[in-house]
Length: 195
Image (cartoon, rainbow, N blue to C red; front, side):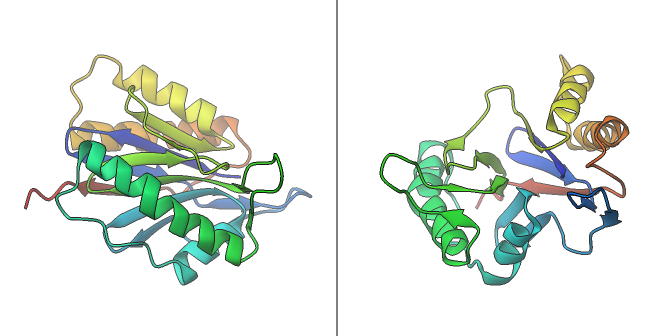
């Protein structure tokens, strides 16, 4: 139970999350485990089982991304190097299921990965997506957060301060309607370092 939201800017990204956790029998708490993990040049937001965030924070050493990689070169790197390493660490630690006969490999988490100022959504089947709308949302409150982001940012000039305010407000709206989402909220900004 989580809400993680992201907005893709021009050479930058903002990503934010809630901090609430809950159990199947309804117990609610505030997590000391971050839902967005900073690892080298990466920000990795995780929705789903807490075990996935544990593994990514403590066991995953992401591959080194070329510092100038953008566009098709960065996408190729994510698909061909990052995702296989990510899949391997998740499966190796019991949070992912390998491909079996006609069943695709899958995990019990969805992720938003930010690197070089670009957001990639990695779904539970390890498919990698980039949204032309530049808005991203995963977790139990994602529909509320995505709708709120769209309503607040539609036809606005996207600047980091405007987007930060919109992400915080959208997380708050998600928390109002989704019992799996709660404050306090965490925000991260990453800008592409033009080397």
